[in-house]
Length: 431
Image 1: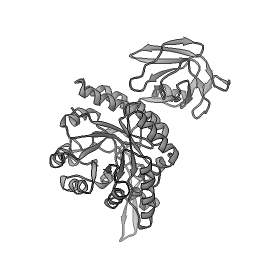
Image 2: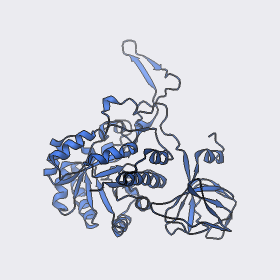
Image 3: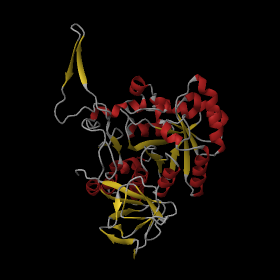
Image 4: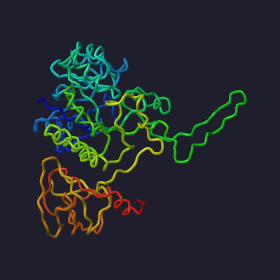
């Protein structure tokens, strides 16, 4: 049986390595303003991006290069130069939105597969066939597409690969076709600089032009004013249906600008969901409990299984984002010998160890700490907080750049976390 690919976001080199360690088959990311995530694009320079591609290939994994913004006439030569530069790095595909750029890439980099971005809004076999005839090998379907429509496209073009989003931020507009940010801040969403204006609270007014009178409308208590704030997509409970359809080639996680913790935990949850399906051991509660540890805007299963007009739970009116059930305390270094603090940590604290896929840990008890197994997982209790510089701490605070010695070598990019209630208590906040 053909096994579907798990595709994870790579906002920078560290997050690329984390995503691969936690189970991704492939990652996607870019280096420039021609990518639809300018902030994450700037976290990669040419050298680190080339290193990321080489690293992924050394593991037998893939990297898809994002060149998915829409060009101005003045940028066409810049696009040509950028595509040529990216082609030299030998990514496994180019992700493109514009049909003109598809044509350009086919000419400049004829040996690199072309994937059509979700920004192109493909929803039917007719549009898919147009791009397929242009040389596109994979369509990243619009988030509003249904599984039945995916099946219909595949029945007409069986050789065309289909990729769908299964997790992450949802756009207020139709697959990214939004101008709110451009109107309010001059930042054009479809060229990579969305300011996420839909996430903000708004006050609503009624104006009478005849009397030139304006009234502020009072919001009902507890209803909130986040009137455009979409919940986050979470399709983990439907991975079995998606894979059973046999028409989806790649399951994609959104989030190049999100945290290393998100990159690791979300990727691992979907890795297990996919593997469990193929092993006839699918249990949605396992994956949802892990996904619930991340910060989110509330979850929705979006539109793949249900049509948009059938849904009334896709918006969070009362808040823009909420804490997950856990807070990352520290991230272990690539060599596995030290950790950096992400949340205040003190002598005597116990933190849960979240391991990359397939990794194991040694149980130890020494001057630096104890690693033991309990509650179905592994826990580390700190007995000595010593930096590689020799500095000793009673407590370390978030953002401290010291590398703190571990009691034993852990797998690269192991995550150390604690429950959100404990984390808030340490900050002196109400849980």
